Length: 382
Image (cartoon, rainbow, N blue to C red):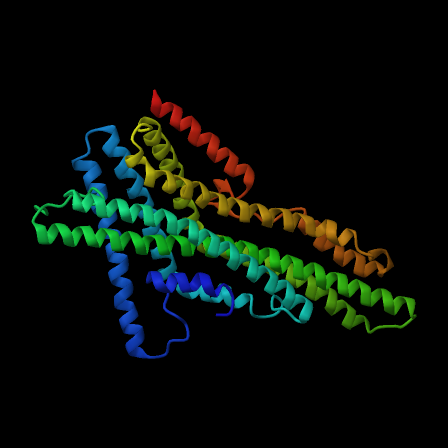
C-alpha cells in the first residue's frame, strides 16, 4: 500500500494490521497470535477497570481517575476491533485512490499527491511526539506506583493479586498494554484525518484536471480546430465521474470509521470533563497532576485533529465550484458549460464527515465540544 505508509506501519507495530505484502503462512499465523494477545490485553484491562468502577469505587477522586483510563481504553478497544474486522474494507477503500479516476495521471497530479502525503506524514510525526510525551509521563507514574506497592491503574479481580509475582506481572502487563494502546490511538488519530486530507488532495487534482481541460478546449477554439465531440464529451464526463468518485470515497471513509468517531467523541467529552474537574480539585498537588496535564492536552489535541481535518474538507469541497467559476469557462460550448455546471451545483453540498450523524467534523463543532465540556465541568463542581 503506497499511501499513508507511516500510519499503517503504526497499526502494524500496534498489532492490528498485518502487512499486505506478507505471503508466508507462518508469518501470518504468528502475527494473528500477536494480534489476539494485544486485543485481549486491551479488553482485559478495560473490563477489569469497569468492574472496579462498579464494585469498588466509592468516592469522586477514585471515580475520576478510574473513568479517565476506562473511557480511553474503551475507545482503543473499539478502534482495534474496527481495524481488524474491517481490514478488507479498508484495503478496498485505499485501492480506490490507486485506480482511475482517482489515480494521478501526470507529473502535476503526482506532485499534488506527494505534497499532501508529505503534509500528512509531518503532521503524523508531530502528533506522535505529543503522544510520546504523554505516554512517557504515564509510564514514569506507573513505575512509581509499582514501587509504592500500587498497580498503575485500578482494577478489580475476583482473587487476591497482591502476591508479589502476580502483582508485578499485572503491573508490567498494564504498562505494556498502555504503550500498545497509545500506538493504536496514534495510528487512528493520524490515519483517519489523513484520509480526510486525501479527499482534499483528490479535490485539488480534480480542479487541476478541469483547468487543464478548459485550457485545451480554449486553445482549440482559438485555433479554430474542430475536436471530436465524443472525445470532448468523455473528458468532461471523466471529470464528473471523478467528482462523484471523491464523494463516494469520503462516504466510504465515514461508514468504515463511523463507530470510531462516535466512541472517540463520546469518550473524549467525558474524559475532558473528568480530567479538568480532577485537575481543578488537585491544584496544590503537582505530583498527582503532572502526568494528567499532559494527558489532558493530548485529549484536546485528539479531538482537534479530527475537527480540523474535517473542516479542511468542508472548505475545500465547497470551494470547488468557486474555483471552476474563476476559470475561463465562457469560451466553452453550451453543452460543456452545462456539464461543468453539474459539478458546481454538486459542490454547493460540501463533503462532511460526521460522528453517527450527531457531530460534524468541523472547527465549529470543536468549539461546541469545548463549551459543552465547560458546562459539564460547572455541573460537576456543584
